[in-house]
Image (cartoon, rainbow, N blue to C red; front, top):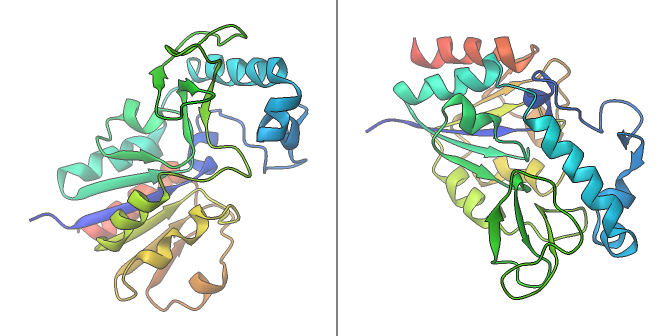
Length: 230
């Protein structure tokens, strides 16, 4: 039976493909405040603005490609049972070839009913006011906004509990509950953290079984692969 590698990925791995991250500098996304475009309150106040914002993000997604970091994770499936838990809403992991990807915060290429959360639809075009679910309610981006529950956290925690190796890639470990996912893993397994500017929270800073690789995902994941395969 193959060992299970659980990978937590954040914005850093997708940034190498050209997808912008609001945590890099001024806290803005395309000159929008996060409160205006990524909260239930922003949606209630100006749904047209929110839809336009995510339409732009979705359109940008079709202009970028997976990078070597995404491909390196997909390649690990030859030797390991790899489960990716991502904070990212793009589909670059899937396009690189990874087959077991759990999206904690939703997906840009999906929309859902504003009233019935289980009514989720694939979506590759602009989403506009007046686009309704089958029960007549406005569709919204299938994104977990700040202040909303993270329904995929429980299955993600169950995956983390089974890890034989835990790999953290391209995340500042500042967004909870995702940043606490490693707490569900067994303490005696090997942990790796790949990031050009790693930020060790208290738990990671006290781990003796943590290897920190201060490199971008495109090169750092290959280093991890050489360690675990070799």
